[in-house]
Length: 321
Ligand code: ATP
Ligand code: MG
Image: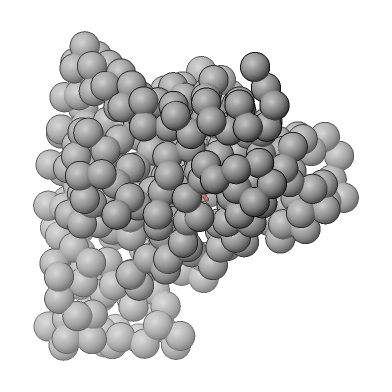
């Protein structure tokens, strides 16, 4: 099986990314799965080049530090030439209407000035990410499902029109994990791209910063600790976080604490214990550019080699060269 997943370096990785994705990639990822830092996808809206370059490098270091096998990671832009070429082939296979129908585009792009053309076409780049590698499974949330459907449609259409090249990928649902919510506003999920970072626990936050943010987390009225995600989202989020870090069930944990303060202390310790080793290993890698570059280059070479024959066949069959 070849499973493909990515994380976009749109900001610093946070506890939600770690518990919901990265940790799982580290523990369940098979040797021929692929996990990549999708930096090209972070260019579809206004971005800062230097910042993006540094975030992509940091994100790669976090993946490795978290235990995602070295031989399964790469940075998307290291394959910019291959992906650019395949995106063109697939854009010549897709219709304008298919791209314009994408819900994500309609939500983020339609009716705004200065929208980048890449915001319309990035689902085709995503199809190229998937089809170049011959991925069998793409675990995605509801919001990305439509994009995997597009990749399937394009693979089928290309194969039917020009000749069999692409494996038709399956969209799979990732195993349900509790969505980590923002500590200061539990009505929204913790996000890399949230501007106010007071409620975001970053993987690379110092322990003191993590503790401070957790101490300031909003809790709901009442001092008793109960698990009720709808009625008491703040306390329930803290219980979900504690559960995620310790492997227990949030409802069982609620009974162990008699005050919000006591719960917060426990959450702070659990989060620090979970993230501190990842932070330390990440910093070690970032301070050892030679080692990080070696891993990055090997990952890029492997991913490019894996896709080379598909790209060559696709170009040939569509009439190029
Ligand atoms: P952005 O705000 O730029 O969309 P993000 O924090 O939502 O960033 P993504 O790059 O969209 O991160 O997602 C990377 C992975 O992390 C996905 O597998 C996603 O399901 C998971 N993830 C993101 N946020 C959370 C969260 N709050 N709780 C659990 N998992 C999360
Ligand atoms: Mg997101």
